[in-house]
Length: 210
Image 1 (cartoon, helix red, strand yellow):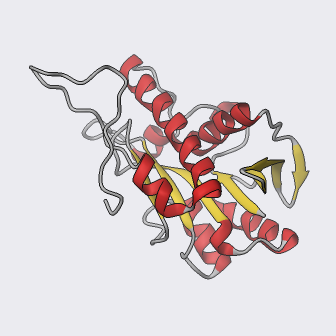
Image 2 (image 1 turned 90 degrees about the vertical axis):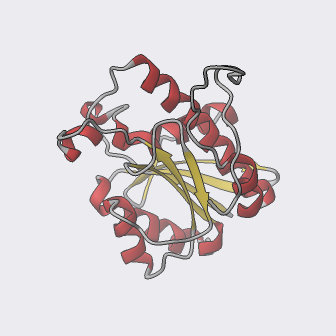
């Protein structure tokens, strides 16, 4: 069995804020798979499905971001899911909007939700998908930025594209493994060019190790 976790804060006031990028990406995946993430279990909302023949749980912790690890740890234990079958989707302030980064393991960085998961699991040896929500204006408050709603149309478009990329990456993780997901879906923000500009909406791939 696999567990795909999208991080965010519950409550309408947090819906579709930058910090809820994990929830939004997981919702895209759930819609694609026709899954309802409504069943309550271990301080989370979950939905179950099959991806590539593998039983998979989609999970949105309801503990608020700073305690996400409690729900994730409890679900892994209850369903006896090995840590190598866990992937977590979350926002990253250090990546520009439109950027998706998949990694097989690594530190929690400054993300409180990931810090909670690493602390509760006692390990950072699990896969993750980071969605860029950076490009914060100079001097802007960090908390206000990540908990803020997106008003800029171009930023909104980039984030929506990254949610779809992240959803596809998580699906690929279950079907083909984390290495394949890294190779296929690691992306970076499209740069504008005066000539020979790439087609709008296309996100170029980068080497898996980036």
